[in-house]
Length: 367
Image (cartoon, one colour):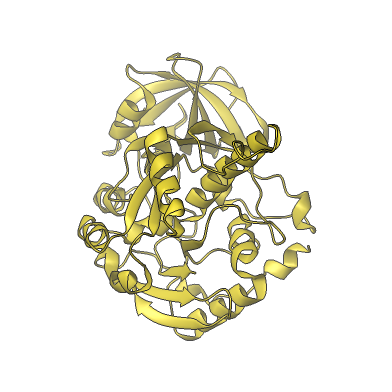
């Protein structure tokens, strides 16, 4: 399909610059994907649209404070974004480094802490494609330890921030789900930002199961699609994991007729990746009554699954998600799930009703 089919106009003032005062006080647009009908609600009332036996699947990745600042010996400022550690404890970081056009391999930089004091030095080892660099960090500890001293929340570029440590402290709490457990993401699974522990407890009391997967969200989630044809876009790859206990929870819900409700596009990609592997294993076996039950099995690895309109969903029955950027792979994914015409009509309704968009914005339930 043509990428411009994913276009829509959003007034700039609807791009949320801060989260709602209380997590579950955000608005909720409920989209019936069968009819295209929409209902306006509040996230705190999401239990009204869930049933006993349904299974929410959360992404429990934890966002690292991956944004950091450094200076050249000349005093020129640099801004970095941690992407991944290279090697096993070698102090080599792959980063995006803004302002590094004149920096050459071998040059030493001063990495600053949140108080703008020098914390450690780093050597630029290598320049790579698309603005990526390899740094050797001269400090003890793994990336999480160091970033907890020098890092700021890696908010997307449409949320305007400087290096104010007080604002960073607020963002570090709110740009993180209340159930984050596994460190490794450089962007939040934002659909989950609306949940509180109290709300999750209420849903469980009404009979809704809660399971978890892990997918470490990468910078590619914000990468715009520049190709004219959507299929020509090079989709980002992200590490995921589903353990046996959570696979069993999801399988039990399905066996009893409950819906599998993915909280976010990241949980959706994980579930559909694992379900695809399950189908693949089943198809490689003799097709008798003992093979290919369709149950999910524990799995981990890297997914490059690109879900676009025409994709046949294997396991996800409903989805909680935020409002996504035009020409994005995330908008393509929910267009595949609910029908692109339905989604764009729902977005027009949301704009007319002054919903707040993107990472710190309001939510949708697509059922």
